[in-house]
Amino acid sequence: MRPGSGRADGAGARTPHAGAMPGRLSIAAVALVALALALPAGAQAADCAGADLVPVAANLAQVGQATLCLLNQQRAAAGALPLLESAQLTTASAGYSRQMVAEAFFAHESPDGGTLVDRLTATGYIHAGNAWSVGENIGWGQSQLSTPRAMVGAWMNSPGHRENILDTGFDDVGLGVALGTPPDRAWGATYTTDFGRRDLNKSKRAYARRHRTALRCARVARAAARGKHGRRAAVARRSARKACITRAASRGHR
Image 1 (cartoon, one colour):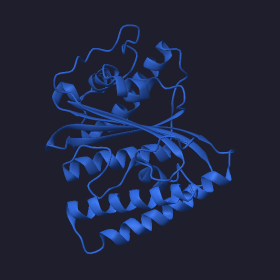
Image 2 (image 1 turned 90 degrees about the horizontal axis):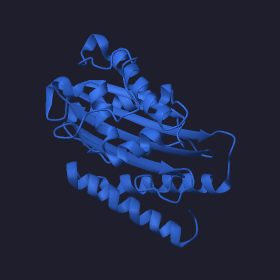
Image 3 (image 1 turned 180 degrees about the vertical axis):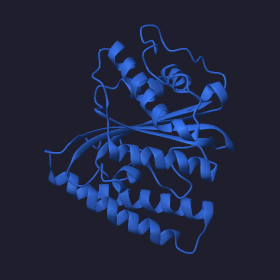
Image 4 (image 1 turned 135 degrees about the horizontal axis):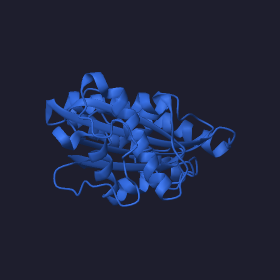
């Protein structure tokens, strides 16, 4: 089993994958191979229905809800409020789990250069003018290591994933479970949990400026990748976008 985690903040102080978008990003990934999988003491899964289900096509909805239950048990044990499922986050989470399986990769940035912020902007969870904070945990496992209990146990035994799960700055969560894993489409399950918080009433001119910069730099990146393919295109996009954002920051436009 492999886990992974990540994060981005609406303050704009740290945006490792967000370009000029306003926000805080935190990401982490894990594959369950040799991690200690027991849930930490004080957060047992006895009352989470489906916690020990091996995912199959007929039970994916129940597996998702069991995962949410387990996450909220961990938060309750740490004194944090429960997460509420967001349809926009779940759309992004489920789509990304399927993409990792279909394209045989395991990372927070897709082979075409797409980031967590890109995915959440596409579903409408993030948009210009709003303060936000988002994070992501990913993981995959096979057989008994693919159950919700095993996945959440692995995340809780990994500092980056644990931080996302217990972060009191997150209110919402999306739960995406897809059959298959990046190394084997026919066996196991791949999980993505996207975490978020939005202040829909907070609008600042700085956020709008950053959004315009992000859109402009995205166009620059696409133009740089034109005529290139595969890895060369992804590298060209990332380099051009980074240079564009750096120039904007130096002019005080971010």
